Structure formats: C-alpha cells, structure tokens
Length: 397
Image (cartoon, rainbow, N blue to C red; front, side, top):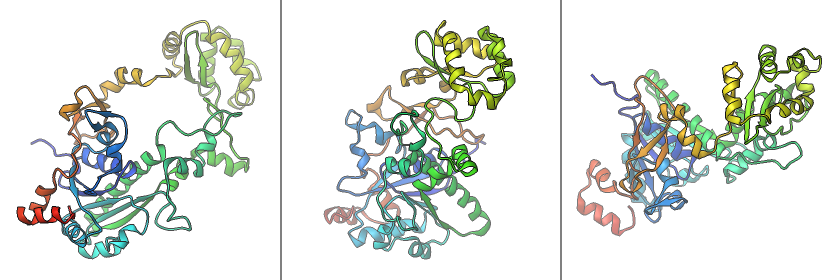
C-alpha cells in the first residue's frame, strides 16, 4: 500500500495574504493537507498583482499558492462570516495574518471560534505578535529586519546597514508557523484539544540572532557588520580569484595547516600571529591580505576544486542562473515544474522537507484563479446553485 503524505486528511483554512501566511499554508499543502484559500471577492490576495508576470499569472503568487482551492468571502457581509463558521466546524487548522484585532471585529477571534470547534488549531501570524505595546503596528519585512537587529549585522564595516536579499523575516515566520502548527496537531492527538498559535515576525528575527546575541551578552559590546566573513573564525570569508569571488570556510588549526600547505606557505600555520583560532581572528586583516595574493593565481573554479580535494570547504558565489543549473540542487528536486499550462518552463522552489512519507516533488499544481472553487466548496456545506448565485449578486462571495 502506498504510504500517504504526513498531513493527508488535514483541512486548512488559509485566510492569509502576501507572503508569511501563504508560504506557511503552501508548505502544509506540499506535506499533504487540503488548503482552502479564502480571499476577498473584489480583488483577492494582493500578491495576485505582484510582478513578475507570465501569461497574466503572477509568478510571485504562483510560488506560494500552488494546489490550493480558492473560495471568495466578503467578511463585511454577515452571511460570509456564517459561511466561514460552517467551514470551521470541519477544519483542522485556520491560518490568518491580519493585524491583531481584525478577526475579532467579525467575531472570528480564537475565543469565539474555539466554541465552534474546540479541536481547531488557530495560527495567527503578525508583525509584532498578539500582545505587547506595539502589537497593532503594521509591519513589513524591512521593518522586522531593522528592528530585530539582523540588518545591523548585515553589510560591510564602513558601509550602511543592508537588507538581506530575500524577504527573510516573512519567510522565517512562515517556517516557524508550520513548526508550531504541526506540533499542535501532534499534541491534539493526545489531548483532543486545539489551541491558538501566536507567531511574530519580530520574535522570529530575535530568535535567530545566534552567536551575535551571545557575543553581545558576554561582552556588552555591540556587534558590527563584518562583510562577507565570519565574525570569529578566519579564514572564513570571500576572496577574489583571477576571474570572480569565491568563499572558503577553514575552521580549526588542522584545516588551516592544510590550506597553507596547498597554497605553498606552510610557515603561516606556525606563525604566532596565525597559529591559533584566536590569533587568526585577531590578525584576520593581515591574514586576508597574504591569502588574497595567492588566490589571484587561479580561477575560482580551479580553487574550489583544489580546496575540496584537500578537505577545505569552499564554494563559488553562484548567481541564480548557476543555482538553477547546480547538480546538487537538481538532484534534490529543489526546483520543480508548475503544472499551470500557461507556465511551461517555469520552475518553482520546492518545500525542502524530505521525509519517508513525502516523495520528492517534481511539480506543483497550479495556483487557483480567484474564486474558482467557490461553488464546489459551498456545495459541500449544502448550498444549492440558486443560493450561490444569490450570494454572488449580493457580493457575499
């Protein structure tokens, strides 16, 4: 018998838009859940209008909404709220990323909803969380990166703080939300009770400050950006080869010795300025200058090959064309086809979770057109075609 996906049989109501929530719900779909995306009938998720487009389909929207069903509901109409409540009765998970308090205006906050379905896992994703003095402030990825400290650590020592090149705080909030939802589903198996989950983008940023925060706690000295190098290890950074930059990650004395032997300068490994991790870190600028002279003698690809052969981790700094051609990435099926007929040749990023019960993806179903499943979903809760047409005329769906 073919093993089912881990979330087979789980029904998710996705009331989210743009990125953090849709990314969370996309991962739940990829792991086997049925996901009903609930959108405003007037315009749907804002990200339907985000560039880039191909054949009038937003690829941004496509990446994080594939395979979901689309139901339109206008919550300003009480009938729409009642329809959602009927769906909640049979749902396992509800995910929303409205500003705190919005769901309560419609009587759809967790305290009210759990009366309908005590087993429901109710996940709220927001910029600053459901509590605290700034809970009601609007938030965007750049604000979370700035306020959470990540931006202060990104860039070069004498340059301005820099934004990470992807919407990192949105994406990591979605990942933490998935972790919390699946954990809550596991706990529900033992307690038969649901619960509310409160995920804050700012919280997520603070939680991943790792060694930077620990160094601050130990010294009370504020860490500064260090460019493309490690804050405590050396040489653990980028270098210029004859044609392009590449990176190496030499950790520990034994690895540094191998590097020096490969470069024809074994005396560096016994020099008191470089013989220990602490010494190399203290003299990292001097060391970088000495090594940089050596690395200009070959191409980056040649150096990466030689370094790997001598057990010194190294990599090209790949652009996205190279990422798409990377044999390891392709062997892991991390770039998959869209099943939308208009998007032939378009690759999407796969969910990176590998499990025995989760076969590698090779494609993902198309993202839904706005409201394309409205009638089917309403039929499932007992509505006739005439009722549905009346709801459409009233602007409910």
